[in-house]
Length: 357
Image (cartoon, rainbow, N blue to C red; front, side):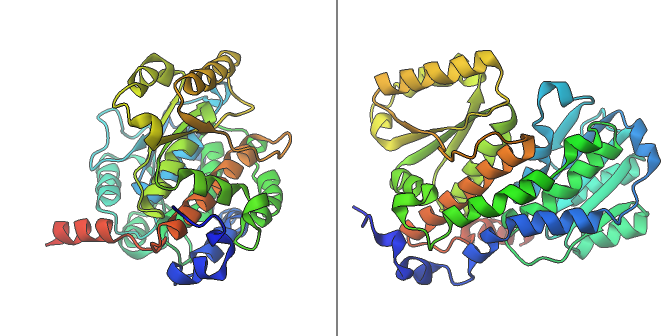
């Protein structure tokens, strides 16, 4: 059993958060604002307007920015958008494709492989990175580069890895400038952040509440449409921050297969906690499906919850990024409950060391 007042003590943070990751989570609004200002000074090629499709390349925390940018309401999907988490570009990618390679470290081997292939194929190219090899090769190739300076685990530098991508989508003719406006989100996020920080007690802190509910259980995050990528973000943050098993899925697809699999093994009913990430942008039929799914889970005696942020009417990016921020804080508190450093990624580091060896 976990002490239900533990997260409200100073020991909770001091015991494992040696790198002050909580302070980095607080900085998301400032990251977004800084990235918007800095990237506004980068000149984008007029030829991007003719791009046939936009392809984002990256891995892990660097790829999620592209994923969040790609999950648009159907009416805004004016060109094909793809996210590549592989060593190779698809065969359809060529000179008419805009390839945007995102790597916080600039050393992600899959991202570098795609960048080099994009150069070889004569693609329109851009790179987003804090430096290193990707920055060097982007400069040598003479392609658009956004190089930022912010020290954090890649997954927690999201503002810098995401904000520039929206302006790139405008340049590529996918979004109109007003549709890529992050100002409302930048204005809304500080107020939300203040409600989720360690100083706020569990009784009024939704992130802490959810962390206790997910503790010693398997989080199963279900989104839809614009929250499909958010569900994936939650899953990744539970993995990397909390060192915890987690899964994600999306409606309506989950109603066509996943729900049938909730029956066995029988212990799943006790082990899982389902999180439903609804959105104001959900299709009316998906709204019905969320309601039916909640009813089904209750009947199956499977615990389920919703964000309950009560933020009122929000625009697309405010809603999406508010849910991202909530998930980031939940995963942070889950790490504290498991007494594990939320910044450390020993298993990932060990795998990379084996590959280099």
